[in-house]
Figure 1 (cartoon, rainbow, N blue to C red):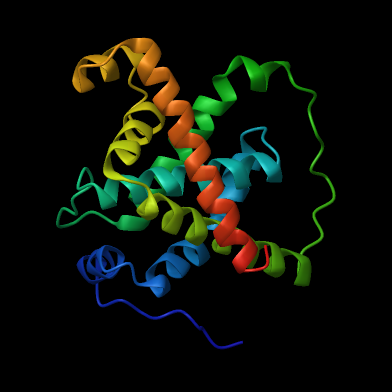
Figure 2: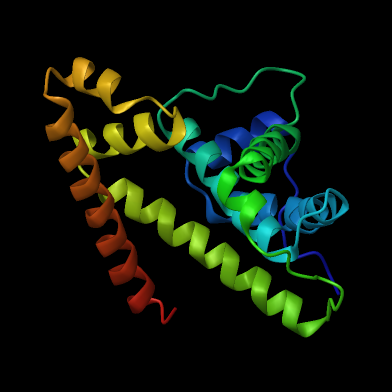
Length: 194
């Protein structure tokens, strides 16, 4: 099967394509990393589902940091390595969480490959793209609150100080912004038939 993903001249070229929101660059990252990351998580006592969740969350964190300028490409740095590291940190955080330690272990012994995996990977890529679009449709204040809380893991108290608001008000705002993001995501997903 011929390679359907574009070849980028170098990592700077890939970085610039990501900044332009070129879908082919995001597809390239997914194709390059999803299978390898899944294997890594399974080797570290995780499941295929764990790998999928951590990969999507890690990629989303990377995309948000790319969007807001927190991630700047440096010469000699492989973007695939950076994205893999985002996903790996997400997985390690999940693996260390109370929720993860106390849930029943799911066996990933049966791993039917081929067509089912290709379809799943295409669906996951679509989910990442839709979430990226949903984030872009949020107002700046909501995007900042979501970024600070979910990406930077900033406590509500600090966010309240930054916004000169009461902590309870910020908690409500975070909830409202998250619900708006979910609503936008659902609308976009429905339009795409997901």
